[in-house]
Image (cartoon, rainbow over all chains, first blue to last red):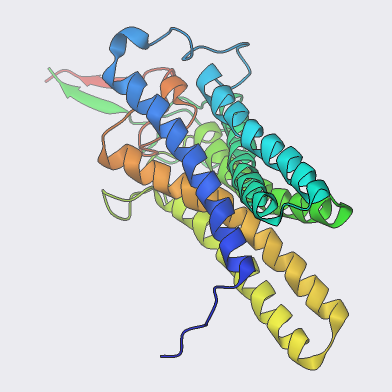
Length: 145
Length: 143
């Protein structure tokens, strides 16, 4: 099998972005782990909503955490380029791409949470107007007394 | 940030948002129409996320592969316009991947670590009605 002498820059950039996105998802999971293992934290910050139609604070925090590496990477890269420091510019570019990956995960995650939260739930067994009535849908649970 | 970098970021964000919209559409339909336990809201394997999330993950692959192949083919032919288009499609798929892969990883870990989701906006078990929905009507049979 022939291996490439050097890993293409595009592949490294993609993996850096994917790394940022994965870290973002793991941050969300860490909050969910805390919520599950600490029942006393339920209904308290950050497991509350700023407004009833908006995502929970912990999701907003996850999204907010992605901005600093993105902005810091961007600013440091520009500064290092002006000074001609190639090594620092490269590190800052990687940090920027890492933050970019986080933003690429967090933005649709917030959109998804908001959309699903604001969709009214249909009760089990109820029928949607215009849809055919399934005989099993209306039966419900049978309790034998 | 250069203009080209801005454009590339927006294309990637477009891809990621498409993944988010696909995921939202599936779960909004699940919630609004009460499609509990109906395909694609079923578990292929108890250790894996529901089929609707796997479909969202799978939908990210075609633009990525298509863009890659189109770009490579156009590069050989020297067609810069098609090459640019292929690159853009590839970046769109890349953005979609950046949403779908961590989403699948998170849902898989949620299931296997038996964790819950605060607010229940994102269902972990789509065969069950979402939290807060009215209780199912019961039929009482007196024997």
